[in-house]
Length: 210
Image (cartoon, rainbow, N blue to C red; front, side, top):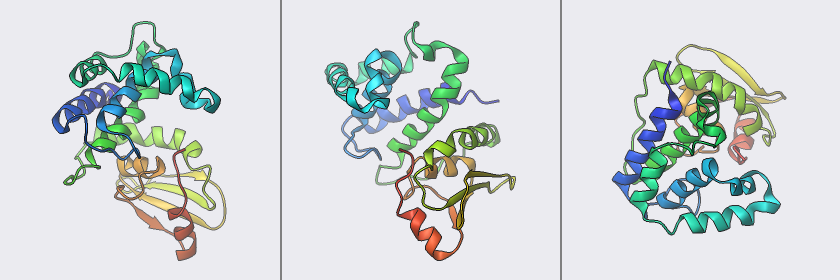
């Protein structure tokens, strides 16, 4: 099985250096450097609590400004070297579960925000790794949907209901593309939306992934 967190960590660092610190990402208002800083703070600072707890967002913002004063190449190298020894993310199992999707999605946030891009051929191992992850975490990501949401792996035909309801829309594609869609990257994800026109339009109009 692919160690998704490890391989995507290396890949996001390579891509960040290739495109440069000031290029845009799919995270609105964030440059590539901002995204690298986010990843570092998230796994390396107690101030990351503000990512999940809105009243403490100022802590995360202050820490991000502090970390962001460092040179871009230094930040990328620190990210490449992995989480601090005392970070929960230093535990391999936690790293894979918590960072696999995080690094994959944010890598694509850099790649797909550039003027020219194409989907990567990730291979069966990576797609098979992503599928149970998106099935597990996708329910939270689509909780704001006004319609039911089912996902379908376009290779294996496997399906999972992320949100019950009638009418319902099926999001069909490679696990990697389905993952990006439910994480809110709807305009860049290469998926099919199957359902009646009204239900599909309502899903398209909804911000997912928050």
